[in-house]
Image (spheres, rainbow, N blue to C red):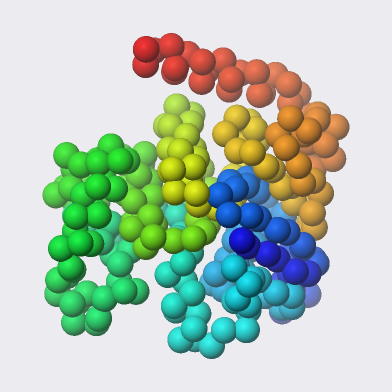
Length: 266
């Protein structure tokens, strides 16, 4: 279980990116984090694994206070938190397999990682994950030969090979076309269900969030503006977070496109 208690981040300029955010995310729950640009979504995710240091408040994973950990303790804790990035964060000159195995660097010694001498069990798991995300045939391709959707699938496999308890996903579909975006969101949610894995997904696309996740949290100016089921997110709620928009038409269009995808696949 992930718990945020009065999580606050204030920058040196005095800007408050987060203000007293309280959240509890149980094991196995996939949560979408929505809100306008500058609402604090990316900051929240990065405060959880302390890529950004919170100003105050607590982050607890299974009861352990992440915000109080030393640097050594934080390195060990980060093994339990897989991160999937908007810009993929792959090493372009390395192969798909090598990029996936880089998710095990926190578990092997320096020299073994330097010479890429991973245990056979790690290699076997990497093959299994590549098969699951549909990239087994591309294991020996360089990362810079892949499409955006394929790169994101490599990033998903790299995060999962850590065997994490929590996935932190930062705008996984921002650089992808609509059809690939739906495929990636569907894959992430399926994998979380298979592994009983909690996830926090920062996403700009409200319609995608409503289609795929069981809980949505809306941020506005660093504060909680909504916390509930997708079905509870009315046009009025969306307008209060983002401003005026024809939300029904936007969501209807995406649902129709997804139905077309499913029909084409059958």
